[in-house]
Amino acid sequence: MREIIFDTETTGLDSRDDRVIEIGGVELENQFPTGRTLHLYINPGDRKVHPDALAVHGITDEFLRDKPSFADVADQILDFFGGARWVAHNATFDISFINAEFARLGLPAVAGELVTDTLALARRKHPMGPNSLDALCRRYGIDNSHRAKHGALLDSELLAEVYIEMIGGRQAALGLVTSVAGGRAIEAEDGPIIVLERPRALPARLTEVEIAAHAALVAKMGTKAIWSKYQC
Image 1 (tube, rainbow, N blue to C red):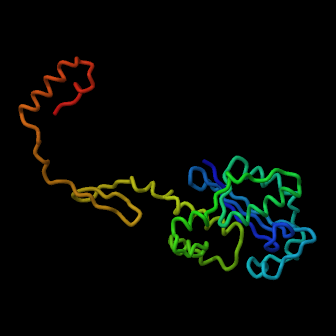
Image 2: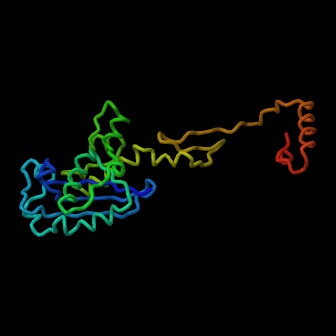
Image 3: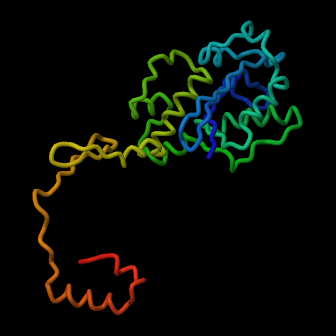
């Protein structure tokens, strides 16, 4: 399954009037990062960055002046996301902006069934919260110390790590077994579980009579019977 963990930064909070000015995405294939990313800054035209939004992401009007418009990069976005699920934290916000941009270009909206909201997942998994991206990074031990301001690609990379932890993608390691003295160690989420081997095998609980009766029954089944391959 292909998924794109993504984030946007915008000029403000109203998708009807405000515009997308940054988008970042990280590709996952079967819950593992492929190394493919998308990162674009976008010129919002005559829409100015609201001071409150500027305080969050630090992207200025001057910085955006020479960047391409959304129309210029729409095909690049669609190619990167094509056929994948769209995964975002508080996805309703991000998708509303993406769909508003698509609508301005006469492009179809992203269907709701293709969208995963990690905030909704977090609220179900951790109903007592908090469930902000920073809080989830702390909960799962993910280093976000370099996150001074919001940034679409950085937030997508952090969210990808959080998402993999939330859905148990890293629990594939649960089946990894290594030998230790006197037994084996099974790698689990909270550390290795040591499973010791018995110093001697338990005695059989079958009687000689039962073993003979079973052998006689198997003999009647013929040589092709699967039970003939096993012995008590």
